[in-house]
Length: 245
Image (cartoon, rainbow, N blue to C red; front, side, top):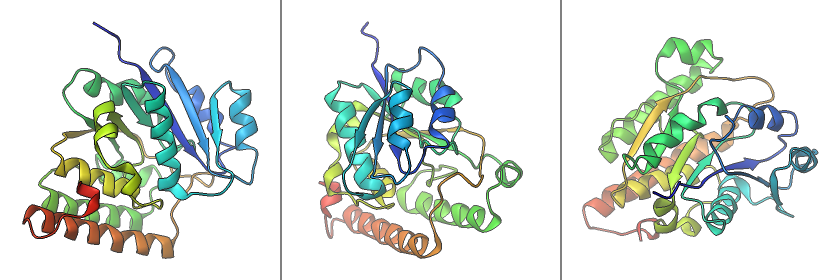
């Protein structure tokens, strides 16, 4: 049986201080290649990644979080990846768990895997997650579970793995170039019948980790709820948004 090709993609923006630690924690022999897509960083992220021997692609202008991921997945599929795992290079997610995130997809049990930081409230808060973010995370995830008919502990994780079929089927280019991208991908995947599971991961919040700010966060929440509204219209066969085509 042919061994699945696993590629890690890192959507990077000003990650020079943390990308090496993130990369070094990936277990040896689990992945075949690591692709870093730099979204026009103002620090030396590109130089650090190249010194580590990683495949580096850089945008000459900032395309946003979603725009960065589009390049990540396009390049991974171009390199014949069977499984693609996104790890933020800000060291907020534990890349030592790469094998655990990949295995259920490789075994054919699920199409998508999330790394969940919300196994218990104590773990989340002890790991540094601000209480307000914890409450919002729980609230948004509850609403998404009800609307989408799933039971995931977290919908806002940036630690995700996808089968090749998911990335080749979903209309990625029609998704947002902003932070909404992950939510649109999840909703679209469920609409297409793909299966999602999760694996608990430690919570790590510190000053070098990236974080969405208040205004952008508010915009993200409103857009997320609108995406859920579009899903309801789609299920009721009233309106079919292009993210479901």
